[in-house]
Amino acid sequence: MEIVFQIHDAPVSEHMKKRAELALRKAARRAQRPQDAVIRFQVDGTVKRVELTLHTATGKRHVAKSDAAYFGTAIADAARKLTMQLDHTKRTPKARARMLARRGGA
Image: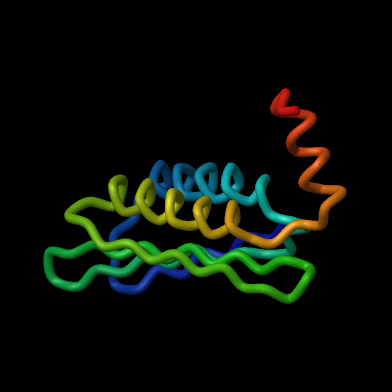
């Protein structure tokens, strides 16, 4: 999966880039055939903004934005929002049964 970083007027360290990439890859494991992603960092005064965009092979685009005082908190919140979006996608009956079997459900 190709990941593109877009940094707008924000001093972002390599550690923050790596942290955002790991959070995105972790969330992307829940997606059906992820194709590419965009991680956007922005600073507006004292507010740090992170936007995670994930494209899947089905043509859907999942976007999660978060504002916080620090990039670390914004990354965690945006990753949580992206995960929630991916958890609520529609699945086929066969995929639902497979997921229930892995969880140990009846």
